[in-house]
Image 1 (cartoon, one colour):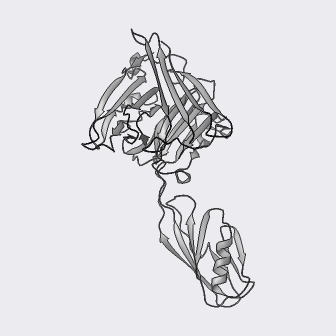
Image 2: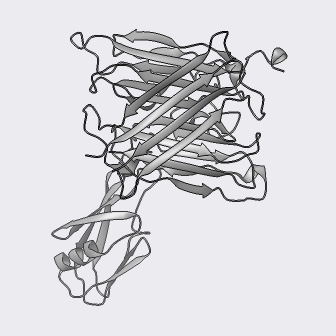
Image 3: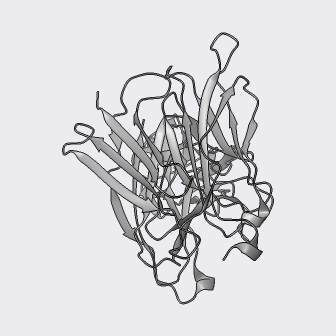
Length: 144
Length: 249
């Protein structure tokens, strides 16, 4: 059940020489070569509030297990950003078109991933966000 | 304007009953507009230090928020170059969590996640620093050429007896951990990094004068810790090699 994620970062002119970074990872369970076998699938939400909302709820049973999160701000207006946070700790802002792919330690129930459409107003329209979680079975008894 | 593109492809033929094939590209731009980012750290590679035991492993600051634009459209790439599946790097931010992380006593950090062997991550980073400690030194009373003032490992020898000139002399020196400015006989020092545990007094900023010259120290701004420095911590005492790159405003 191999799931791979490939990142390619390229630029011909951000430095004196071209930048070309390309890496592929295979999503595996913590500390092993066994493939991650669970996913939420690709989800889509429309944010219409500057209030922080929970995108993925931290599950303490996921502590020490492997999980990968993909989030993308699908707004086409570059000024519309979404603030991503772990609980109250802000990670950064995804501007229109930006994506992120991070490991996620569900250290406890306070480790929920939250988003806020901080730049939203009634005149900007909704900010669409898509996300997916790839993870292990959080039931240790069946996490073979 | 530079054009930098990040592309991600997520693929699986057997995770689901239908094929997963997702590819999206993002042109990295400045916050809130379509102008391309123009600054990057370049791809760097480093192996964490070897220590005597797992208990001695500590976190390493990868990027300090104070060095970059707060709330800019900064992007961080980190890769664990290990090929041993059990070896991981824990990536954290300076945090405000009250609870321990993975049972360790580093409750001030917010753990983002663990990069296992071969894993990479790509994320936005708000680079929110804290408040830099600020204090003043006022050169006063009677000074003479040859009197000294010592701080931060640097000694300044007065060239003459004029207090304003001595303040200017101090300001002209480059201090390892502070930046300075002078106005009249007062020199203002600002720490290079945010921190909550700095408190400078006369025992650390020491005048030695032949007469009754003084250099009173007064804290004007109390520092606070940075809000989002990025930390990495290897899981093994033998060190793990990682690569990283910061593209930023």
